[in-house]
Image 1 (cartoon, protein in one colour):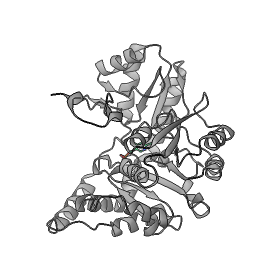
Image 2: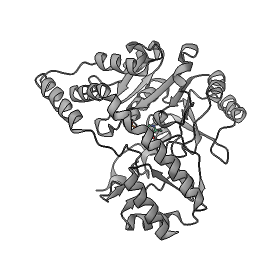
Image 3: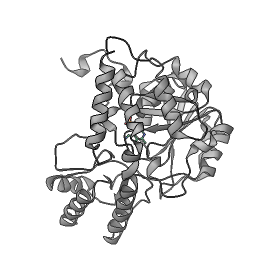
Image 4: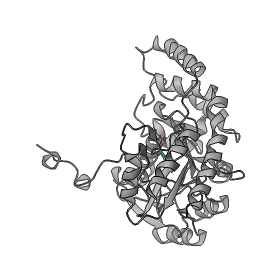
Length: 356
Ligand code: PMP
């Protein structure tokens, strides 16, 4: 028997699963992780806390993750309280819960492509119709056109990744506000990469007091260097969190996950301590690629989209053959490289020079 013989949903037929190839090569620059592993001190503290909480593993975890949400609220600042914060297994699960609560059959979600491909995948997976709006040639948004697209389609949910994946483009708050004013439903600003934004790029968190239908999503997978923990979270009006409680699975966040995330928050000075170096490495990478005559999108994230290659697959394969794994993603002719350590980026540059 194969997949086609199963009585799966008609809209899943012929689809491929999402996922970057996990290939074991010396230099992995394909999934926008933070390349710096936790210190031995952090690992020891984590092991000790896990040891302590393991004594309770016969019991279900705190269903509402109260302590973790309080810690996340304190970390976010902006006067946020625990009841304005929600957490799940990665921001992907947060986004799925948002769609379960605010999307569904007969409803629509709109996003500005190219953008994070899981937004449409989770949208259609929850029986919500995806509406594709577009970006400018340089991947920025024209606020007038964004507002017009929202006015035309009246979507139940608008997705705006800022900084955007895979382009690295951050949106000025004025554009986010224009979208909030135009949108008839929920507006999700996906800030998975916000910690990497260049100086002076403000978070949409500042807009929450004036916009009760705004949801700002974040993750510990990127700057926080905890991708393996699977912890994403959001800040929104307390009523939005109440809506998500209606769809979340009971005990969705394991005791171990809640413990690990709280330890990570305690060690945030260490974990976020690499962000400045990664930003510097990113800016150096942009400059180097431009010096090579390539086209490079401005980036406020920990990755860089560059091109344009008539045969991007050949470039991707050439890099892989030299032990460097990047991502074949985004518009045709473009490739995305995640920012690694100085050594890893030197390996990337050497490999790419061998191809160009
Ligand atoms: N949003 C964006 C824009 C992303 O790029 C990613 C990860 N690639 C996510 C959300 C999801 O990350 P996670 O589920 O690890 O929090």
